[in-house]
Amino acid sequence: MDNSGYIVLTRQSGLMRDMQAVAHNIANLSTTGYRREGVVFSEYVRALEGGMPSLSMAHANARHVSAQQGALEATGGVFDLAIEGEGFFLVETPEGERLTRAGAFRPNEASELVTPDGHRVLDAGGAPVFVPPDARSYGIAADGTLSADGAPVAEIGVVRPVDPVSLRREAGTLFRVDGDIEPVEAPRIVQGYLEGANIDPVLEIARMIEVQRAYELGQSFLDREDERIRAVVQTLGRS
Image (cartoon, rainbow, N blue to C red; front, side, top):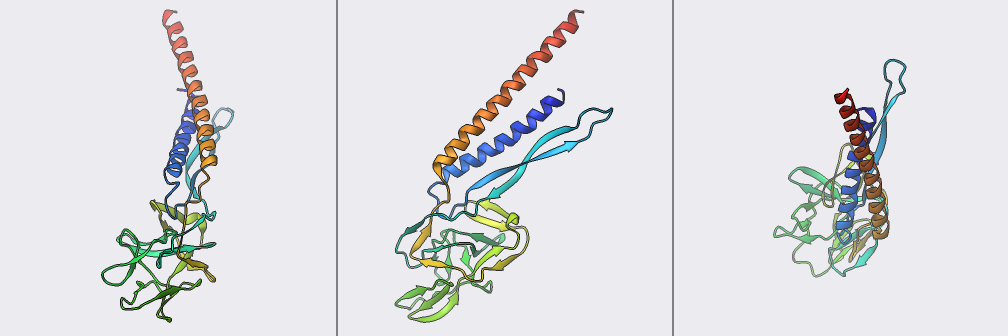
């Protein structure tokens, strides 16, 4: 295969990753706190020997997580929380601290605030959030202060990565940060609401069609190139 074939193959590989990202976005249209993800294409250029033109190949390994705000949906749940603006809730998992925008929390048997998967929610200092089990009422202020019967008992942590590019999706609505995190100075937490996925289904379908057509175009080029090479081989074989 000549250089043009390899160039198209790298492009096809990137388009496959792009299609996988689009399909994953569409599958999570109704997932609470889901963040849209896209593939970032870059160009790899290398000089060739003998005065030949440079070789350029596509590279699509990087992924971008959208920071766009999702719609807030009222649930009335006491421990259903949504963040308006930037920031993530900080939770503790067996693999370490992770970030999430999915705020469907509940107290566990130890009266600790946890996610549906049982991951403990952490406060501003990185400690588990304790919910007094005998309190008659709970309130959560915009800055994350948790009050039981009117008395503050904890402050739910809202953080962000220092470098937004270091945010990496790990599973579903959980993210890890390949770097440092910092607290959000003035977070805005809304009690009794959950944030929906920040995905526009119309745009995702349009993107899927665009990627599919681009992939089909590249595949038709590879088919024609294969036919050309076969014809050359057959011609040389007769001579």
